[in-house]
Length: 294
Image (cartoon, rainbow, N blue to C red; front, side, top):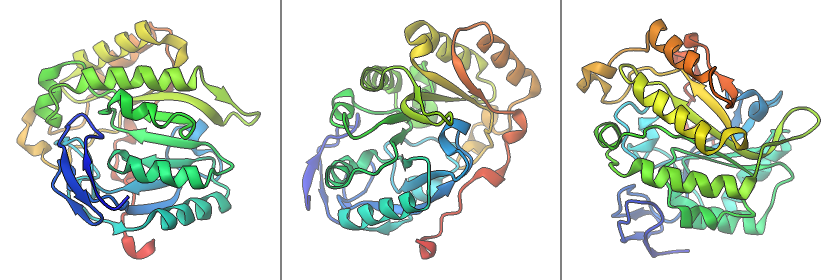
C-alpha cells in the first residue's frame, strides 16, 4: 500500500503516511523499515530454543518510553527501508536458518505490510507478534490467522506512570483490551514435543526501580484475569537508558530487595512462566543494530 491515512494504533493520528515517511506519532512511512533480521538467542527458553528466534526489529514505535534501550531505532528512525517482497525474503532467510519462529519486534506501524507479507507467504514456523502492548483490539483482530504467538508487555496499570514514562495516559485501557483479544485468538499455550511454544500468549513485565507497587498490581491483575491462559515473563533486566537520567527514581538498576519483593508476590499466584535473574541487567543482551549487516 503506497499511501493511507493511519489510525492503526491508539494514538489515532489520522496522519497521512507515504511510502518513505509520515507525519504521525511514529514518523514512519508505509514501507517497512527494519534495523536487524537475525536469530536471537536471548528470548524466553520456549521461544529461542537451540537455534534462536528469527527476529526482525522494526524501526519506529508508538510509545515514548523514557528508559528505552532501543531508542536508536524506536525514536531515532534508524533502519533500512524495504518492500513487502523484501520482507518476505528476510522471513524465508531466517526460516532457512532453522529458527524456532519468526519474531516481529515493534511491528505496529507496519501492520498493513505484515498482513500483506504473511498473506502471500506463511512460514513453516510460528509467527510471533512482539509488542510493547499499546495496541487497539480491533487492529489485533486483523492478525487472527497470521500471528500464532503474541508476546506483549503489560508495563503499567497506573495511568500516571504510563503518562510519565511512556507518554500514554490510556496505556492500560488499550493494553488490557488488546491482550484480551490476543488470548481469545491463541487460547492456552501449546508446545511441541521439544517444549517449543507453537501457539499462545506470553506476557512480559519489566520491574522498574521505585515501582514495585506497580509490578505487584500488574501481576495480580494478570493472575485474576487470565491465570493459566497465559505465560508470564517477569523481567529484571532494567538498565537506565535514554532519558531515564531525568527521572532520579528510575535512574538506577533495581535493588535486591525490590526484586525479591516482586518475586515473592509472584510465587503466591497461579501464574506460570519465566523469571529473569537480577544479574540479567547488563548491556550484553542489547541487540547490535547495524543496517550494513542486513
